[in-house]
Image (tube, rainbow, N blue to C red):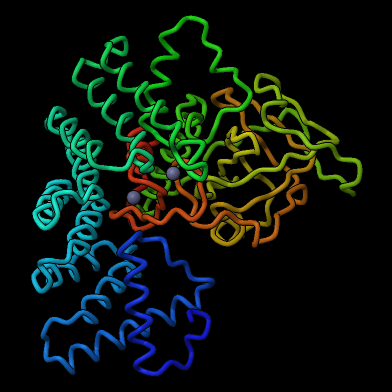
Length: 453
Ligand SMILES: [Zn+2]
Ligand SMILES: [Zn+2]
């Protein structure tokens, strides 16, 4: 039915809205649209149905109106403030419909309004005290509110008592609780209860559906990092395959990204000040990096095969990477942060690009999530800080991958694609989860660049 949205009668439109809302009542992401056009069509249909309800029923509550409102809220979920405003009257008109409270709690959560989340959750739980999704939202809000960890723990326990054992948030609840205990015990990782609850999380992972594995939890990663750091033979640092989440705590990564953002912030400030011209110092490279005439015979190389302590051009090799930070040009170079297939990251400076093209290149070509290959990569030890970077002197040694390869709506923290939530302040940074948003803010200094650009 979704495929033929073009020519529906009013009656068919009403049925569509009802069915869509049934999906959404089960789970927000059950109904997926095959493409943007179909989604747009659905949005138009929902608007029409809402308008008809308003005209025909004179504002009296009806099932169709309720259904259409649920669909509307979910389809506009990325506009947190707008949906939150929309939900206010919905909660009043349909005080028995728990979904409006659930959605409102979620929106407030995305906007870091945790008191309001708790208020919504409590209101919804009056309708149905066993609605465990709301128990979960409430627990998360209490933990992030950071006022009373005991209250947060109690809320997680309430969720765990009712939720099915294979609910995807069960292991996460244990890890989050372990983190609450960790906070309660002055961040002493050897506290028995922390370890015990953490292990309950690992136990709970065993009954997770395979589609939710490997299990993704920043709380788990953080605690695991603390446990491992405490035990003397630290094999974790050299483990060849760090997964997406555990590498978030890699000190090199944090340093590279934070520094990139510090400079970006300084640059933005300098631009706003017209009296000030900003130039970064340029140090002559020790080696000469050049493109090759042909790709034939080039061998792939990754960042971990490149010695970060040696100034060296890797002739005959090609390095394939993804851009994971906003690029900016700071005369005479373009600054990037790149990540390779092992999720290792490094800063990159491009010199020798066509003069006056910096702004175009950073906004249209070297965009977030774009993939590229670098022929004969040059590992340069920085002129000023003697830290490593990948340096490009010959602009033609870069081959941009097709736009279709680009990672869309990349989570600014972990790099996952199609991250749905957007930072409420800058409306630019995407995040896959609230946890990622917090990590990005605290660890990587998103606050440095969180402003309208
Ligand atoms: Zn993420
Ligand atoms: Zn932001």
